Length: 318
Ligand SMILES: Nc1ncnc2c1ncn2[C@@H]1O[C@H](COP(=O)(O)OP(=O)(O)OP(=O)(O)O)[C@@H](O)[C@H]1O
Ligand SMILES: [Mg+2]
Image 1 (cartoon, rainbow, N blue to C red):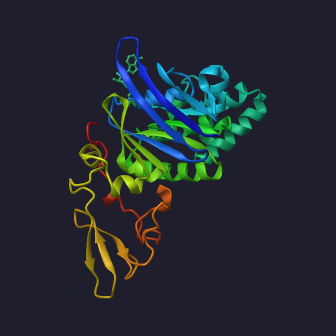
Image 2 (cartoon, rainbow, N blue to C red):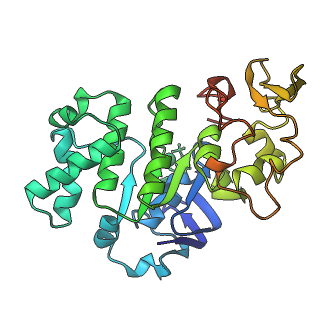
Image 3 (tube, helix red, strand yellow):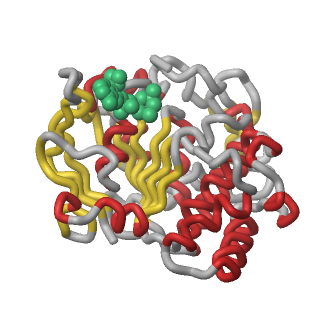
């Protein structure tokens, strides 16, 4: 199930234009990330897919069909939606929050609960937490429940609106890894909203950088964005040219290069020859983000270190 945004625009009744002439093709089982600072129209775009917002121009197609022709309720049951805040029902236990979706889809109580239990496991939550109420969970746990609930209806499409906004960088990294596993194992088409550059480059097969007013600054694979930012805005947003992403290499006595981040912290080692012998893929065959890690980063202990992350809250315009 692919998604296509075809020249969509949204002007709210009060005259605010949140999105202008936005087009994007999200192939089935791929992940598109909408990246941009606050107010640039990310949530508006996401909600066009499940008709929580109707575009004032253009159309959104799911699996080739204009969603304007689909009944909103049926559409929302087919599409998992993780809200910007976890959006859990406070008066219902965690397990019942998740079970709501299969119940709506016609499962009986028992079936729905067992499905919910399964989903809690998938997002890495202990079964015992199911009996608690949402306010008895940490922010990060609540966000996992939000993801479990979105998965519970087994939708082909997942819309995720800054699902990890409320968690610390380490847990965030863990959740990102889980999302990568889930979307590969369960074969989901994902539209993921964030204003975190690292998160976008980690998760996106393609990343759309938006500016104010929902205008596209650039669409590309993470590698394309980093290697060829379309303009100064994109470069600044990605932290290129500001020194933030400038790594340095030092030749090692034993061969190869040691790579350091701008603070001089070691990130890993590039083996001799790796840079010239096929470490970069041929033009036109840029792999998805999670495969496009720098050389050496697939070795234990040589992965992205926390030092490579941008400090949270440091995003331009956030
Ligand atoms: N119902 C509404 N009526 C009028 N204006 C709206 C409405 N909803 C959103 N907007 C405006 O549309 C613009 C885009 O809002 P949107 O929520 O899509 O931004 P966002 O990129 O998700 O921001 P954030 O990162 O803060 O969540 C903003 O200027 C916002 O104030
Ligand atoms: Mg938003």
